[in-house]
Structures are given as C-alpha cells and as structure tokens.
Image (cartoon, rainbow, N blue to C red; front, side, top):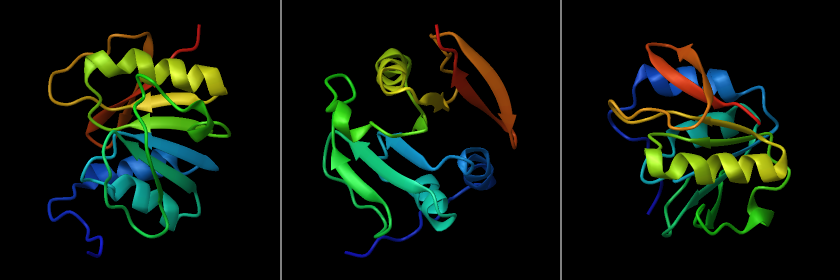
Length: 137
C-alpha cells in the first residue's frame, strides 16, 4: 500500500513543519496514521525517524521504528535535535521529555483538545495552535 496524505490535513501541519524545519534530525513519537508532519519535514531536507508502538505506514523518505517511549531503545533517539509528538496525552509527556533530555534534544509537542501540559513548558503559538516546548531542568 502506498502512503497517501490524510484527507483532512490542516493548515496547522504546515505551521508545525515551519516551526520544526530548522532541525537537522527529528524523531516523531507516536506517529500513528498521520505522518503529514514527518513527510513535510523530510520534504524540507530534515532527517526524520517516526516511531509508534505498532508498525505504521510512512512515506518512503521517513524512517520508521517500532518503539515504546515508556521503555525506549535510546539509540533510536540519539543524534536528534528535536523529539516531537503530535496530540501527546498527559501520561506520555514525561516519558517523551525524559528521552529528549537523555539525548540532549529539545522536547516539543502538541496536545489534543483541552489536554494540559503536565511538565514545565514554554508555549509557542504556531498558526492557530499551541506548540509546547519542554523546559530542561
């Protein structure tokens, strides 16, 4: 099966790609069935690895690794400038931030709906949405 762009891709995807495109290497945690940000970054020349707890289909220029961020294979994240997650639930924010800190990467994520950020963050407006940037301790 060939990867196809999700039909309801929002303008927010483009804003996220713009916000993350300055990185050389991004690991997107929990890519799910929406690899649009990963694909957009790869199209801009960013090296992208997408992860999820089950096998997912990604575009050909996005590497994919099955990994659970709560019990991570740290080698997957080494060399990343940014560890990113879209629609990150509160219970996974600390594990993602911990992995980012272990490899010296920035932790950036969005949340779904009214979910709060439960770790120390700076908020950045990206389009009409909020990108949370984890504060390193």
